[in-house]
Length: 115
Length: 115
DNA sequence: ACAATAGTACGACAGTCACCGTACTACGCA
DNA sequence: TGCGTAGTACGGTGACTGTCGTACTATTGT
Image (tube, each protein chain N blue to C red):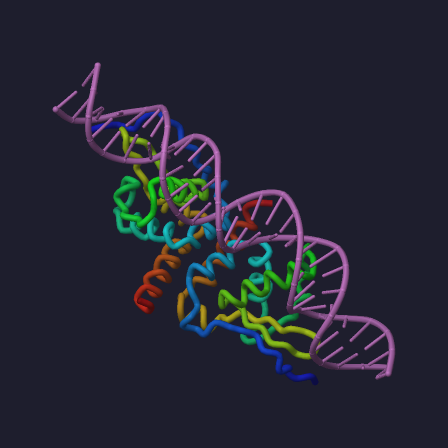
């Protein structure tokens, strides 16, 4: 069972997370799709970048994950060649109670409506 | 008491409002400031563009109000030389229950924390 | 009719964004 | 040691963003 590797990844501390950055991160369909997927995982569970099948190139996937991480929406750790991604639910809920759930619910409602 | 003038202004219908556009509209500090202000008004009340003192030029103000309108966050009607702006609370609450309030609460929480 | 007020249209500019491909690194495994 | 896999770095591209100033339109009040 492989363990986390010592490659550094910058994350904003909880207090550094800015609402505007979070909203901006969530305002993109691809990133929202990522968040939607990560939200289906259990508390503390993580998934690799490639676990979500996005219809975009590898480099663009990297880009979107970085935006999410730098906004403080997800946390990322290397584990071998893979990178595990998890929602920063605790931090987001502490800072902006209900925000994540409301956005996810809004997203679900919209997806139910259109298409 | 002056009445609404017949200059046309495009608004998305309720069903046309897209979550991504709303989040994008709210992800800007200036626009969030506008929404914050409009939220202090009573149900159905409206304010002119210049009622909010934004530290930006007139043309940029126009730009931000258009983004908000086209995203479906606010409605605008001309009344004489002025343009009255109001939050589309009913529509937003119907489509995305709790979203507006949660974002406003998150904004308030953040403003309490920083600065 | 004219002046003042409120906002628009337009063009410009620098910066960011989403996206790509190609070449690369880091790691696990045989 | 070498191969395959997962993701990164870099450079580039076209589109969009936030900002401005200047010149304009629409409306009200004198």
